[in-house]
Image: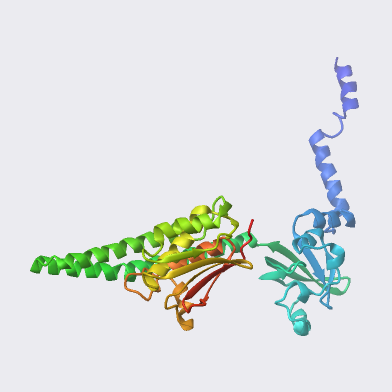
Length: 370
């Protein structure tokens, strides 16, 4: 048994080195073959494949400022192909780089230096994409290159923009609480004190008016907070039907509506579009008088609502779209702001001008009809 075991051990190498020592020697041999090398023994094609498949956009340019190498990820980011991007000047992709001052920019780098920047790169379809770049100056066989990795940061920028809008809304709410709501509240409290002291019930009318204004302000601010920039589940909406619904609920009591019977159909959130016309009609009722005539009709790329009231001075037309701006004691100053937010949320544009009869004309453009 001992001899058999000995012969079996010879065949398995048990009497030479233990298996674990053999593995260590193999690793050591591999290390000795790659000592002094930084490429791990890989062929150049390996690194080519890594740069192409790593999923990060890469661009390399030389002293002439033109791309000597780009990978497919960078071409995809800019909406083109590698052949078209090859040889393109850096300034054509990054408008922040001045071609006339490129040499100065190039010389400002030291070999081995890396700079991180945020910029907007021009896509080949004319649009721009926000990016974060890391550019490193390297030297290969005595020739300088700048190697850049480029990452699309659209989602990050969108997040920042969302936070900025939230900050703006918080400031607007603070303004409402500190000023717009405080004024009618002070009036109501003052009149209440007078009513207690004098027993004059006439003060109760003023209190009621103040409370109604407070209620209107709260409703408008909640609308801006909850739904101002949001359009959910858009569907084809008959504009004429919405206009007449809005007039029934918000039109001036003694006013008259002249609405085209060919207002068309738009892709919209029906409730939000109803808010647009209700706020426009309420604005007319507040500023144009009780017997006003309101016209609603199509334009080449949208709709307009016009009245024959006193209108708005050209110098004030931008102001009326600001939060809380009003020219009447009973207006909240938020109606047209809500209209603008809903219009913008649809991807449309809002503008104010003078109507043919000298009143106000509100135009919504950029509308695509079904």
